[in-house]
Amino acid sequence: MLSKIENKNNQLRICLLFFLILACGCATIKEEESAYEERILTTIYNNALNKLINKEYEDSSLEFDEVERQHPYSPWAKKAIIMSSYSNYKNAEYFKAEANLKRFINLYPASEYTSYAQYLLAMCYYQQIIDVKRDQASVFLAYDSFKLILDRYPNTDYAKESYYKIIYLENHIAARELRVGLTYISLKKYISALKRFKNIVNNYQTTIYVPEALHRMVEIYLALGIKEEALLNSRVLGYNFPKSKWYKFSYKLLRKNNIIYKQNR
Image 1 (cartoon, rainbow, N blue to C red):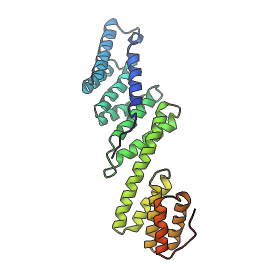
Image 2 (cartoon, rainbow, N blue to C red):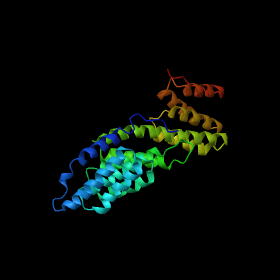
Image 3 (cartoon, one colour):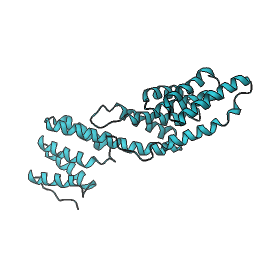
Image 4 (cartoon, helix red, strand yellow):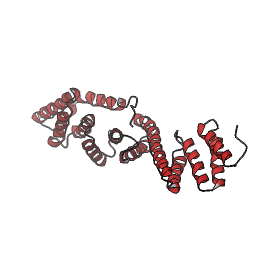
């Protein structure tokens, strides 16, 4: 279940405003272009912007595409690709937006707009996440894309937004792993379940699902008769989460199995 994320479109609106401001500067178009060409380019671009403002997203995308088609070497061609992608994003045409954004990133890796293109691409993946019961391809695509932004553009506003998205996604992934692990337990496939819980503990240590994952590992080791590992994991749980209900459950379970140790305080 994809919860509503606060201010999820703030950066997108900021960037849109940026491009709207740029649109007022059409006088900067190459001087060698004829007056007729300049009028046509200005007309097409402004028409596309008006359609975008009026939420006619499909038409605005087509108009921005026309800017690039008719004037591929114009400074506005790059902006048009971004704006067409944004129109598709707003229209929930994520596959179209993704294709355009990937093309932009490949064509203009050093552009001043590339960090935004990467962020918008990540948001396209992010918006396609449904819940932990469905296919998780979009989750990992979004996760990797936001991580890439942190690595390549750490000093941008997009990096801050990406950081918070990553926290959410890590919890989403851990929730999925926990759910699958519990299913394996119900089927008594303990080794498969153990792998899922270990993945949570080792790779998603800051998520809210770590205490339960440790407790489930205690359960599994007891079921397998490996008391030493059960005791070890319960101690890790008690040391890191002494007030957790999952630690209390593990402690009672060990007592029930006549495995007693000094309880953490």
